[in-house]
Image 1 (spheres, rainbow over the protein chains, first blue to last red):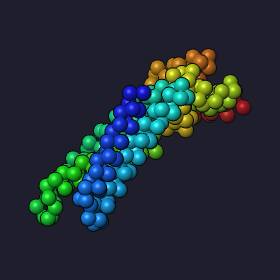
Image 2: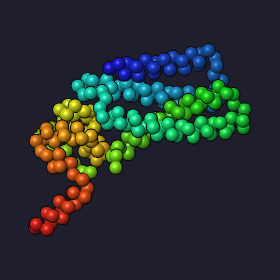
Image 3: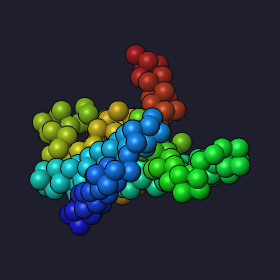
Image 4: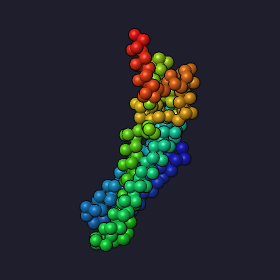
Length: 132
Length: 77
């Protein structure tokens, strides 16, 4: 249950930060900002999905985690780690070829890492864990 | 690796959720097992086999074993 609460708290904090960022007038409405906000919303949705599925498991008197869910997380994390290295290499490569500021590149890289993890998690779930 | 979980579950008139609760995993794990998308740990395979009161090798079949069994059955006929 602790992990479910943690998922909800983190999602709420991210949403609150996004709302503050928008309300403070830092949003000029350019496509790059809209894309970043959309990615954040997708990731918040993923966090909420994980929290809700844990609560649902609890209500159905199932364990909130088991050997499959732990293996899926481990496989998805390791895949995301490998792919993220290439993302950062790409960001380093384009850093002197673009006018983007360092904090935008780092923020983009972090969002990219989270998105890569989401895709890896979906991929591992779709393919399964046959260990063969 | 194939398994006979779906068949045995139907024979025992059990839902996926009930079997999941009995062996201490999430329903999703049973779904993955039945679809052949997950090979369980030895512990889980043992627990499932114990529940159905069958030896592990009668619940979980390796692809080559399943082939051998089938060809054996055809030869018997």
